[in-house]
Amino acid sequence: MTTTQSPAAPPASRDAGARQLSWWGQWTGPRTPARLRRVGVLLTLAGLVTAVLSLIGGSSRAGAVTGAAGRDTTLTQHAGEIYQALAHADAMATSGYVSAGQEPAAIRTRYDEDVANAGQRLAKASRQVAPDDPAAKPLDTLITGLPAYTGLIETARTYNRQGLPLGQSYLAQASQQMRTELLPAAEKFRRIEAEALNTDYRTASSLPIAVVVFGIALFLAALDLARRESLRTQRRLNLGVAGAAVLVVAGVLWWTLSTLASESALADANKAGDATTALDEAGALVLQARSNESLVLVARSGGSASDSGFTEQLDRLTAKDGPLGVAEDRGADVDDIRAATTAWSKAHAQLRRFDDSGDYQKAVRSAVGTDAGSSGAAFAALDKSVSQAGTEAQKRLATATSAASDATTLLASGPAVLFTLAAAGFAIGVTRRVEEYR
Image (cartoon, rainbow, N blue to C red; front, top):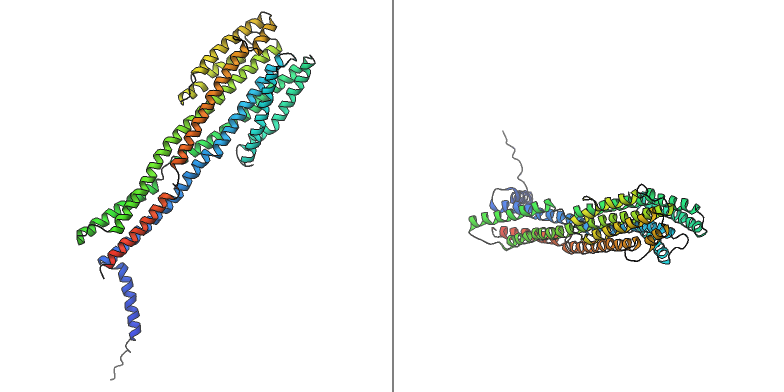
């Protein structure tokens, strides 16, 4: 019986199979070079993943800080200015009407400046607010309502110059629109933008846990690799791996120090922003009290019942949990405001005594006068104190947001570059170690 033998594999095929098995074995075998290759790939990939996470987290934080220092802060300031300008315009309009046709030029000028300021701020804000933005609706209310308000005021002035009492109804209607429509819309706009700013603060001050966890894990893995190789080969230093470990530590420290610095700055900015908002509200309460004081005189209906609006506004202003208390708690100096409030309250009480006793002309002179002890002078001093405190709070806000911006300089790219270089260091260090086994 003849046995048929299979033809031998060509030499080229045997060489190709051997090379294939050899390549696979280089990565999956139990020997040290294969193990080092696997570890090197894992460390390199982990370094690149950390770099990507750092880039994403850094970009997000830098964007939040930029938003806090830029658009959102600007819109918040616009909203506060609109709120203040409208309340001040109404106070000036009612104060001017008290003079019975002889409106003081300074009061009329200030009213015109307030209306112009509100209009300019509304125009700037409208260019920054998208149609689907939550702030768009109250902003539209303000844009359409302001011309209607100024029209009513001009009609009231016309009748007042003619000595006709019909102007009182137009003034009352305008003031009612301001209290029930324009100021609430301005307040809503301000609150929306303040919340957007606070969201930026929270995003900008958050530490990306994934970056820190990956960074620490990379550093510990590098130490473990160095320890194992030292025990196996008695070689204590691999420059590539050691350099990569140093870069990882530098990247994590960059994130940590930047977070601590920006978090401190943003905390100061948050306090200053809260103080600014509270002082805006304080100013609005003062101005509404001034409008009430004037409206009572215009109506010539003295008495505590008619004067309740004035008392209510000042009580809200000085309450423990009122805007002055909030502003003081957030670092603002409100001692001058409290003292000026007390002085105005006394001057107003004297004005009411004049009016209630039938001496209307003295009451009017007190309301619009600038003499010491007059209600007009006391109001002007209080208004100035609130304005100065608000300006100081805004300066604190600008300084703090600038410091936060400085703390995040290059954060979007710096640590990511370090982690990328660390990945390259792991790859180079492990590759050179493997080559020593050839």
